[in-house]
Length: 78
Image 1: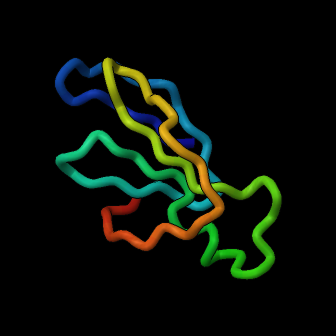
Image 2: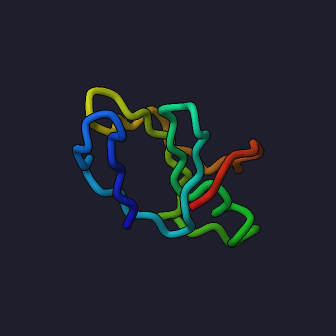
Image 3: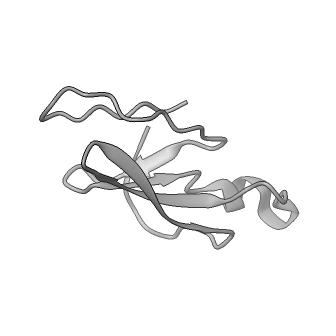
């Protein structure tokens, strides 16, 4: 489980489940869940395994996109 805390308000956002970690940029509201899951499973990616892209707005996470495509960017991990 990943819990998001709004540093401006101190409010806790809805927790998010992750099978393979998370990834973010310090000065961004984008959160990527399971960023490297396609590398973890290689060719045997399970049906349930996705990388999820969320934006943190108004104290809530909004799902932008889910994909089986590998994440190739660089960011900080938790």
